[in-house]
Length: 460
Ligand code: HEM
Image 1 (cartoon, protein in one colour):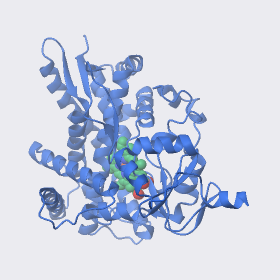
Image 2 (image 1 turned 90 degrees about the vertical axis):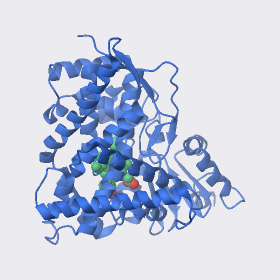
Image 3 (image 1 turned 120 degrees about the vertical axis):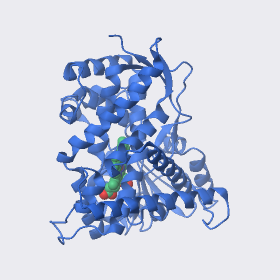
Image 4 (image 1 turned 135 degrees about the vertical axis):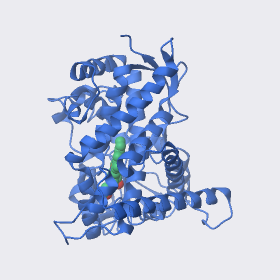
């Protein structure tokens, strides 16, 4: 009898107030809530939050079930779809079924290896501009304090604006950056709120939202119109989206409307997450001088003082491991892994009822000492040949896993490696005096209040 009951629902907090207290606790501090949940209830937990029945799975084997073997029994959470689709329509992150599969095939065209030489040139060239500005600002003392979170957010947008849309004008890049940052913030607020006020209300926040959506919509449609008129491949992602043909499917391409949705999806999916990734790699280097010294030595040996290029990414193995370790300890996608069961399905021996939500928190699974001994240690050698094979499958998934894994993961890894290699050629990184770091879960996991680092020009 006990076994039957146990099979029904996993352990977890029960309350008599329709789950409102759980919803409020998550809103107040999601990271703390899920950490406690894992500590108290183990590998799988269940609770109600407002109208939702939620299963949280922390064990790699169950994550494997949800993201891969039983992926067809799940869809993205409808609330996330409702919120994001206000801007991105039925773009790749949200679409499902045959339509998603077709769009994914077409989107992949923009991320083929042959496009990466051009993307890499942009990544390095934009970073060089930044380090040269810092170099002059550092003056004779040779060091300056800069908020890495702000700097990496701007840099990630400069790189995206150029690689996605061939945008070179600083004012246009800054405007895109402001609009995307506002939308990311609003998306997180709307996804995590139990109740959202209607958009037509004459409130300043609602007006800002309407203006940002209109600006992004008009700008991307203008880019698409210009590309269609010229018919040229400008080496950017948008050109590829418009030129791609679905050879494996119906032999057609994308309509302007689909291209608009996918372009905005890539802009939103690619910005906040990559900015967070770059920031945490800088933090990992600043906090761990031994790791930074080894990464710098590798950069010097591989590059011999020249500017990095795409072919170097495969040679900067230690730096790649540093980026992977930063993605383990400070996984950007804190809140995105939520799925809704399309039918009754069994996960980890418990039944998940149709309509229930299943959540995965890679931040916590990736800090579980069963899969990562001394989990708090920043140890890039976990990803070295000989040790990487020992990492349990699905214990590490900062880019997701299974069919819905990140489309931009190679782009993001290439960017993190090339940006940090270019920085390390010129600067040593340390925390600015008095800088305390607290992680904050928003649309991506970011340092609360920024991350002031001291950048010191390397001698010689
Ligand atoms: C460090 C940077 C990044 C991280 C950590 C990251 C993480 C993720 C994760 C976890 C997912 C899966 C979400 C889920 O299963 O619910 C995802 C999906 C996606 N990402 Fe990324 N991402 C990053 C950068 C990028 C970039 C640079 C792009 C494009 C320019 C991008 C485009 C996408 C797209 C289109 C999807 C949806 C794929 C699909 O459903 O078929 N991401 N990303």
